[in-house]
Length: 141
Length: 141
Length: 141
Length: 141
Image 1: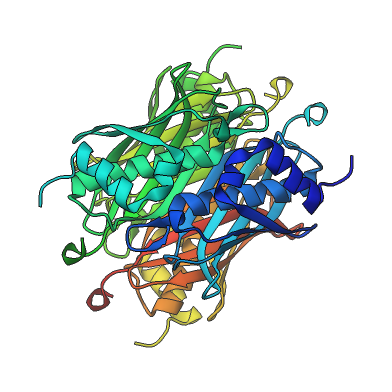
Image 2: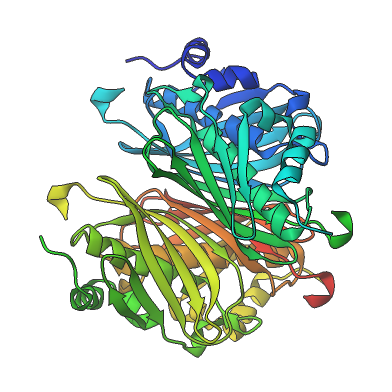
């Protein structure tokens, strides 16, 4: 099978991952080295203190890594997060958040990668994520 | 200051954490030992394969722990997640997810706790979460 | 195959895991619900400030979980840690550290569990660990 | 105070962190961007299956990050690991392991960094570590 393109990633998302539409996340780039997704700012994303809330950042990171793995591992929509570890470094000011996900190791059963989250307004690293995805057997993609 | 009650937790959520309203999470219990929050099932929560998506579970866990800490540490709305580690154990069937958050250690600067997520239909542990919150200085609550 | 007993756990350790002998860890209990291992205090374990160092605690947790999984999953010496997440809660005073490891979920390919580490002198929870082990295929134990 | 040099890092280790001497870890480089430490291979490091055991890798990562923080944050021997998350990617063949630790964010109270562990013989990334250190107040270094 061929690799998932940005266009297909968008289509699969629309058809099968409605929460991402609710949140309005926007895939911007998908290639061999990375998957870049933008969380376009909404007031609903704010938490007390006026920064973007953690759940938005976690959802964005998980989604971006899913795209990166679907590209690298070829259409494995059934890839499932088994572990996600996030460190919140800076409170992001109101504004877009951009996730850059990279697959570090692609094994037969597990894929491991990191995601960096940047606050749009200051181009700062606001959070760092490690995650592991469990891959389905080859005949189950 | 007195401890946050279930009613106040609901009010703060409505006023200051709009994403939780979008997701329709429902706090059910808040006492010294735990904070219980229910994610009432929506079709929008599903992911490919027909199970509840990871971002919903992460948002629920983070929110439940925030409630647990606000109760124990007295109104610290400014408590900020610094680290969250989630292990997904079983794919949750369509249905409610219930989070049970417990504060394990409440220090001066950091609070640490665990959250168990249960699938409603089978009463199974579907995910296990550890998280650390950074607490603001006492005059900044 | 039958389950690993405390005696066999000790034997496998002596024969195949020399670092544990160097550190002098002592398995105390191994049954369906838990694996308990004691780190008998040595001056070499101390770090600046006079508390027991992190690497000792991480080694103890990993080893105790390995025992718990070998008991539950039947002699899988080839179980390999894939992820370990430790939160250090209290600096342990000089003295023994006791690890209590529990398997939370035993799947076909992955086992997930938690380890609590207690400081002996005060019976306090000093660290909390989550870990995931990758299990070998059945014909490879 | 001035920054910790490689020589001072070695001296502090000898005087105050005996477990590192037992394990024979060798700091090789310490500068603004990274701390590099080598675990010189010993047969005692092996685990069943003939690869280097997890506790050795965790100890190496934690120690390398401690060096990186002591350099960047100026002599804070009392920096304490609060969270360490390790993903084991490849079983390292018998041979040296080299850790490269980098501080990603240095705050007032917390420092966050990543450590990459490489197997010497194949120059492969064998494990990836995230860790957070708690920093003491300025008058307590």
